[in-house]
Length: 414
Image 1: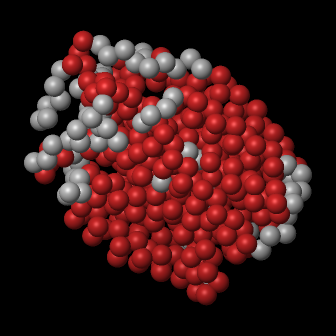
Image 2: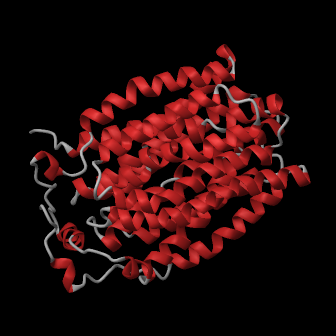
């Protein structure tokens, strides 16, 4: 039996995210102490860099979502990879903390947007019906694979080459591997290759196929209650996740962990994140999305609690495991969006959601600032826990959509 081509597309989306996000996001924390020593900057100063990159990604997401309906996605992905390579070359020459922030706010932000979850989830929604949740899970689990592979590689290269030459080596790696794969394999939709979309297969998938034909205007999207519930439900978890993840390197140094041990813990957690994204994606095709969401929120809250005080190594390992499970909620965002709004305007809706949700990136700045002011991360973790409450409540009000008559219209080109 011939492998459905959509799986090849999702494999490349997986790989691009593993490289770009594994380096730009998961490995960011391991550059921080070197930049602090080199530039005399504070934690909060440098945490603005990653927050700027995600904020820039969010600001551009609505435009990228619309562009995906007009520009071949492989061109967008290749542009994102090129932007990342240029960013790392420029970072190798940085001479001040503000330059790091400027590079992250521009080039890295573009790279994260055009190689990240927005693109991967749009491809999963376009190519798949019956296995849509699992396909989206595969696409965005590349983030976690990057978190597993890239931090140990980054810390090893820094130790061997120094932080400047390590940036150049990693830029060369991404250019050599990701660019040709994206250009040769990625296509926006099955119709671009004269192929049929994946068969629906069951009643639930047939219902999703009906929703796929629905076209949404901007007014309809902003007037839809589900849009705002999803924005609230995924904003504060992102705020908490970024606050914890991007401060992990300095936090680990505070409690006496060496860089390699801290990187290994990130890798173990990332392996759990990859497994949970795949599992949540597969389960989302068969079980209630809200229940899966609440499980993820419980794990995220427990992981933050474990870091308060001076945790033992068993508590640190439990934290890593729980963070891994909690990351499954990022898979659910794409599945929720596709289920509520369909595949036709998925990029448009998801781009607008990401604009709001990525504002949570400033959780990293808040946590770093609290540590600078109080000498401890404990206060930040308590605040992050409190912010999860409105998201958990909001999800109780999200219900499955009722396809409108317009949903039965055929998708052009299908």
